[in-house]
Image (cartoon, rainbow, N blue to C red; front, top):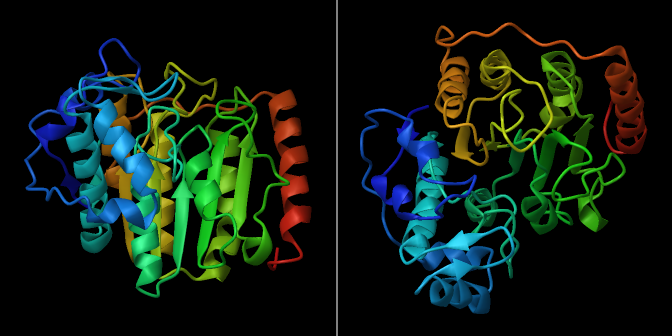
Length: 318
């Protein structure tokens, strides 16, 4: 898995905001990728009215919502982020993009996100008669992605996230609706949880993902669960992202990824590097001392996982 990147993503100017260009500037000497500027993909997920509103809001710039900032070149960067993610879905690579996408809904922005990069690439694959597993390990629930695929059995959405936390929701009883019943796996991690319970959760629900038997795995790769991140209270280390990559490599053949969160600019590039090391079968570059969860956190985690097991058991062999 190689990186798809272009300096246009630095032109999404958010000023003194957690989601700012310094996140990607910390990656040194990344080769430039020629990325198309095609708006055709946007309507796969988003409404025409919303697309036009984003375009209009970027000139001269301001806020799309309380949390989401735009500037004159934000629309261009967001369109390129969508195209880079579609490219990654075709080549099996990692789209190192901003703005991120998994909070964006068909008709409104949310949580720093303009267009839902992973949802657009996923729905394109579904339109091509492929089943897709979306594995979202960002520390926040990808509420936009979850909502978009809530009622389909063609996409399984599997999220590991801090609960409770922004944007709300993502509890163990939210498993999809209608044809999508049983195709949403929300793993609500208690705050202060460490590597131990996170990796246990990945391994615990992997059999369900394998029973789904996806043609493609789309990875919403967020790194804000790291213990030194600014916005959450989880305690993952860089080691956990390496192990995540290894687990995915061991279980799936066709995968691609796109960047979501991760707001510590000194840590993000190391987490991404470790994740790519794991998924590419390479030695881990950066190592930290692993983290263990407190007894009370483990007890709460087990209570939540038992509830999730019960909710999913009617649909899968657990």
